[in-house]
Length: 323
Image 1: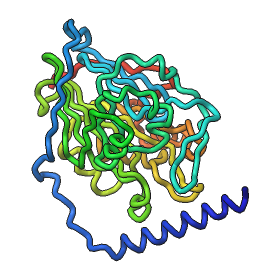
Image 2: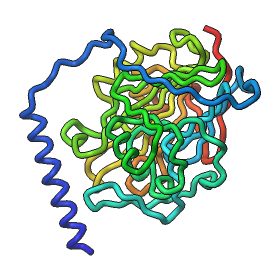
Image 3: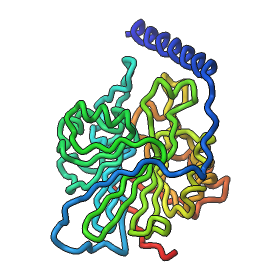
Image 4: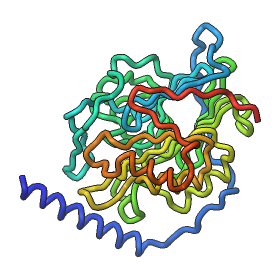
């Protein structure tokens, strides 16, 4: 066992060094200005459910665990990063590495309500686990990265929308409208991210007027704070709620690939949401930065009033915003 672990460590470190060297040698493209034209637009028409939406003015975000939440607003039910493994079960992270779940999800997969759309930040075991891969209806619409979309198609999923940064998906159901825009994300330092799945954040704009949405939500995905993130508030000012993936995930306990507590506060200061809900912080043994790290940094920055802490199963309620 020790030899296998040592071999994995040496292999991964060698790969990291190779990736970093390749990154350093590669020509760098100039950063795209925040004012560049929007990306490609895709469309999804959902079947009417037979009755007018009863939640046009108010919505909820229920925290299920890790990066999994259920968002309900204006007739849409959206599931993010579905992970329904239980305490003691393992996910595969690639390169022979696994991670053990330390918590149980707030509900079982079988207890999910009917889902209109899955927003998947990236294809990784702790965001789309093996049980979800087996049990999720193959016709469920899923919006994710292009790389993740190809993986899902090979698994037999048929309604996949693979997005590049700034691409968007326009969703309609009756009179209700939702726009999902892919935002920048990088799963670790530049030299390491090339070894990990491509990742995206997402902005969800509810309402017919995307320029003045009824509610605007940002989901960070598994990213660090880096220069490209600064384009998000330029394109999407007045974010009402941010769901931040924290945890300070470290590969082999060394390389940080998701935000820790200090990074989470930096993200708040860059993106400037009115409210923030931290998620993805205590569910797997690769998470090395507990929620208290973030809470301490929030207090130090004087941002306590801007943060809502949810335990597994708890719900945050919000209302339509008049702009």
